[in-house]
Amino acid sequence: MSRPSKTRGRSSFGPLGIPGPPTLGKLGNELSVADHLTNDFHASTGADRPLSFHLGDIIYNFGESQYYYDQFYEPFRNYAAPIFAVPGNHDSFMIPNTAAAGAPLTIFSRNFCATSPGVTREAGSPHRTAMTQPGVYFTLDAPFVRIIGLCSNALEDPGLISSQKNQKTKWPGVSDDQLTS
Image (cartoon, rainbow, N blue to C red):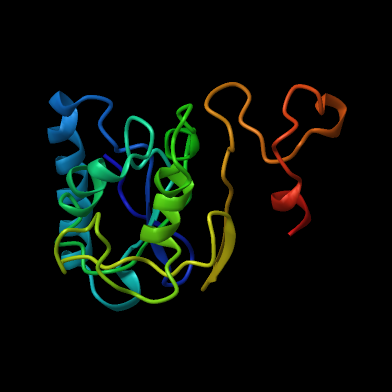
C-alpha cells in the first residue's frame, strides 16, 4: 500500500505505483489501496490532505477503454480530490491493428487531459470526472515540491523518453518532445 509522504511544510502527496490489477483475481488488492488512500484523504484536513499522483499502469492490460471503470473509476469513486497521472507502459502500448479512437494514449488523454472536467464514457457515473492535467507528460509545481511526470513510451526494456539519437534505427517513432519541452 502506498502511504502519503510529507515534505517540510504542509505539502502531502500519495504516490500510487502500479495499482492496476494484472488479472481480475487481483482487483481486490487495487480496491484495498484505493480505500486506504481515500481513508487517508478523509482523515486529514487542509494542506495535510494528500495530493494523489498515479505513477502509471493505470489499466491492465493495455489501456483499453472497457477496463477504466473497474480498474480506475470504481476503486477511486470516494476519493474526493484530483488524481494526477502519467501513463505507464501498459497505458501507452499499442496492440497491432488498434483503431486510432481506441489508442491507449487517446483514452488516457480523454480521462486525464480533458479540456474541462466531465463524465467520460469510461467513468460510467458522475462520482469522478475527467482530470484536466496539461498532457501525458508535464511538470506540476506545488508548495515545496516540483513533480515531473514522464511517459516511458515503450512496453518494456528500455523505457524511453527520447528517440535516443544514437539508436534511431531501433526506436524511430519515439520523439524528443519530453526532453525538449
